[in-house]
Length: 151
Image (cartoon, rainbow, N blue to C red; front, side, top):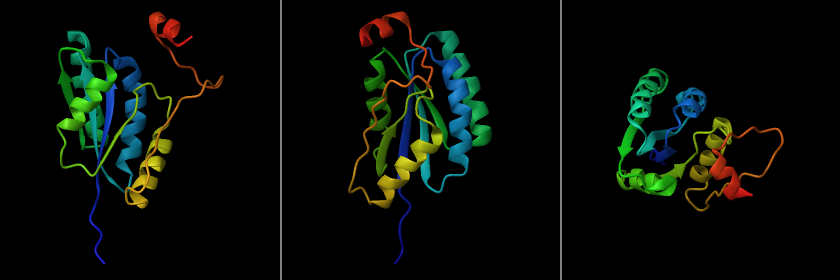
């Protein structure tokens, strides 16, 4: 029996997040480079400032040196995280699976790949939903308005 390679699109939405993306992105690129699945990683810029856009291009080149199947998409006007994710997914109708992960590193690359592997191994008969629980071991930096909205 011949099994076809499943194509996964993994989107990381960003908005003025180059500092966080740099740290997490390098870790993710390393993990993707040794993964056993065909994963197309898209960095979806949701209308960041011009200086951030330049930073994203520089980061993309660093990530591509580690993992070649990564792309940067710029979306404007800003549509928020969900909008950026859906716009990126819409540009990938050939994908078998769609996923996204935030650029803050709250979910490790290893866990992301483990979850994706489970979905592919189940041949799409399941889904994965992640909810970030408050954990004292994890430091998540948020802008003040976001912190106030969560409390």
